[in-house]
Image 1 (cartoon, rainbow, N blue to C red):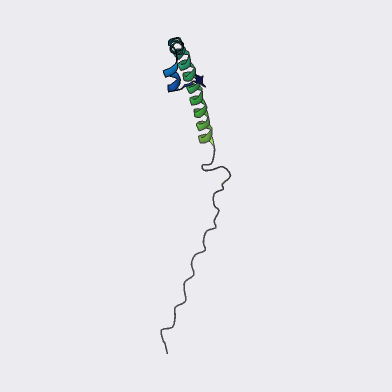
Image 2 (image 1 turned 120 degrees about the vertical axis):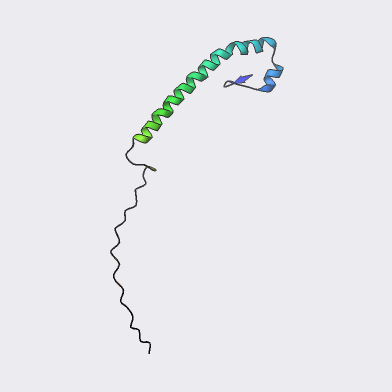
Length: 85
């Protein structure tokens, strides 16, 4: 009837009264276990976020910032002679 804590609606419809009462009796323990799991996962997420923000660089690991040399100043262009003929 119950696989990994998930109850099917069809299973509930076909369950006996005793099975439903047992399921209801187990709910506080199941909820406490889920609350503990959620708290553990929140701690892990907080630790991972802190580890992520504690790094020196931002962005994806392995990507290096582009290195470019400054462009030399543009030379003044030579003006054309105005006579066309």
